[in-house]
Length: 295
Length: 295
Image 1 (cartoon, rainbow over the protein chains, first blue to last red):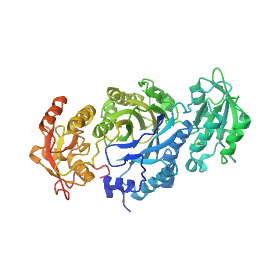
Image 2: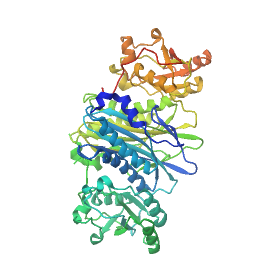
Image 3: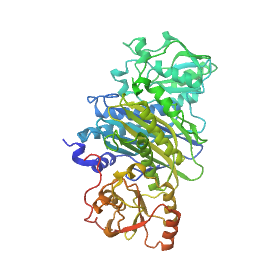
Image 4: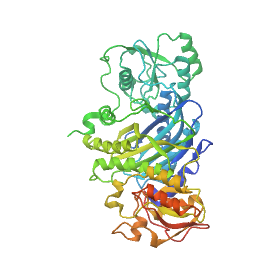
């Protein structure tokens, strides 16, 4: 079977980009010095995010290639969900050994493109380079109505913390197969007006302190209320990471009816209240654990 | 000296982002799920580009770290120049072994940030991951007045080809030290209305056929007119790559006075006419050579 060294860079780029979908917002697609896309009408702001997957760190040589590509796209989509933003255009950077099979790279791009298509995201460019270790970086741009984004930093003491599903054990498959909660985030934003939101990628034990710190708050976790994946322990739910559920804070003044409406509009999700944000210094719990890329 | 493993991911990100400049267009900077930036007023389109540097491919362990960072930023700026677009916001992805010295990574970011500042580009986010080989990916967004971009694809037969300076021998230093021609590209765009433009990264022998193919044309190179770096040969000028000069096509109807005006406004550059674009199939010359990432 052919490798990247056999076909070279230009043929590879042609192979990877020839089936990409375009739409009327893509003014200049792959193949020129830069991509150019149409800006939305109305008062929007531009949203930008990049994320990277490295072989041996985020996936292995045995991970099916389509799922590798899918995951690279799914992770940035999950970040857009966390801001209640609409993803639109992606740039894809592939670093790969010259001995990599062309088939494998094509399968990676197929997985990536398929999920992009589902979310009406267009791949408008990218970059390829040789390197000793395969890595895949997706940079995504999109839009949010100005001042309608949801950051991590505007929560108040007393706000109730919610997660959108069970935590822990993602290594059994969820870390590859999760569905980014882009549409659900819009519903949550509209119905519950969260004061802060983020996606859980490094584990609740690592991510909740980040949200609390961004808002200058502490937290009180109701450990018996944390939804745990069947077969997992509480420490796994706190520390495993790669849950890709949304963690968000809601004012206690929000009515129960709004929660029920929100739940009804997101039938695949279950909203779980798991604690509250508190004033003052951070809680003693959750001081360590979770995923660190350099440790 | 401390390594990335010693300080961990959060401390590294804090170190790298704490000195980043912000301005009123950066609505949400590093630290949240995504960055959010203000869109320009008026009829603009969004310009997107990503580019990557890999240790052992684009630089070595001996390349001064500041120059590595500078080059990563300079290359994407050069692509913006090639579209006559204004760069504005960058996302930076670093993959590095855990044994990498913190000092080295800081120096890379300093080189990158300094050049970004010179061009009023703000670094608004990024990503870090461990990996076996150091790589640095910069994704840049910016703007161009709608329909005022310059692609590779709109040249006509008979258009004259120009380059902005001497080619060849970039390995002696230019590949690290070149100044991206963003402002010069605006002047060229205004004065000469190029029908096609690109930056020379892989060598004239590889890049000119790409421009010609994008426009559906052949070419006639005037070999005795190609400006060659002192001490280099013609084959080096054609094949070395990493010149980062602009190659552009200008209608023969453009007046000599416009060329002289353009030259006067770009005192650091010298515009050289090096050939013309022709109808029909591609020229026999330059069939191979130049830089290929996978060969």
